[in-house]
Image (cartoon, rainbow, N blue to C red):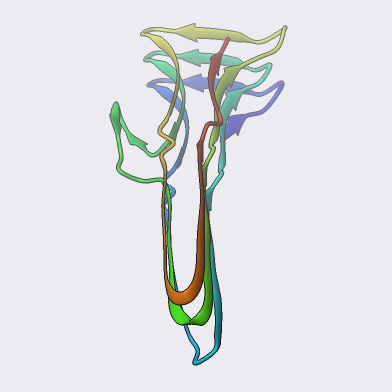
Length: 171
């Protein structure tokens, strides 16, 4: 959400520019392989939450009798982070005389969140407070499990959880 360059806003109350996102991705994968001789199985699991959330006031003239606020939130309600993010759970099991199983699970939570007041030539005139707020909660979780039973058996698990991104409030 934004107020564009060269806009003029004359408000008898508050001016609030706000952008919000709530993101939650949960993926479960289960693989089973059974063979009298050879058994091979793999589970691939990917969960990703990567929104871009932006609120801004450009080179605009804003006159408000109340507050002026520019706010961006990802997985927040007010000042409270929410229990949301990216979760990848994978399992593989199997058996045979020659058996192999594997799991590759990846979870990425990387929101880019920004609130900005920018540009020369604009003005903010508030009868109350001027607030620029950006809040983000990125959570990534992975669980990977492989079970193999055989005369000759091999199992492998790979798990990668990434929680980063960026959160900026700029004037």
